[in-house]
Length: 125
Image (cartoon, rainbow, N blue to C red; front, side, top):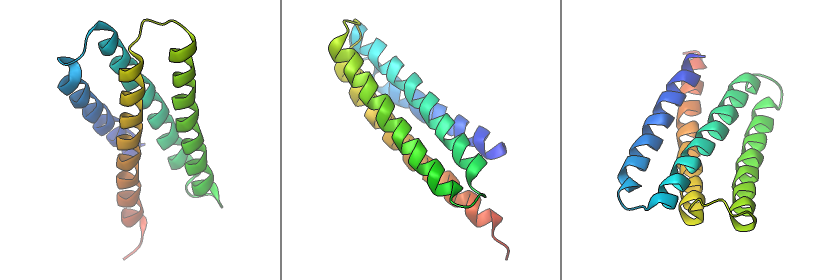
């Protein structure tokens, strides 16, 4: 549980800094899009990381959790793309999709860092 909280804190900090960096360069719909992207990415990534932590010690559980997390990321990105192109939302589509892709990629890299650190701590010797 400690590793999930550490991952959640680092993820929130990275996403928060990224949103703050691009905030001034965006208009109203763009700002709304980047906030939605940040929220969706954090929700998906924190859920995927929790799944990996729960299933990592089971036979084939680690690979199953990674595959499930990848499918969740792709599903959310695809669903967001469909929603902003089909439904008139008033959200900046470019900011939402570019922000979502960026956040999901960065947080997936961070997930690997935390899992690598966890595996070296768990090995004896």
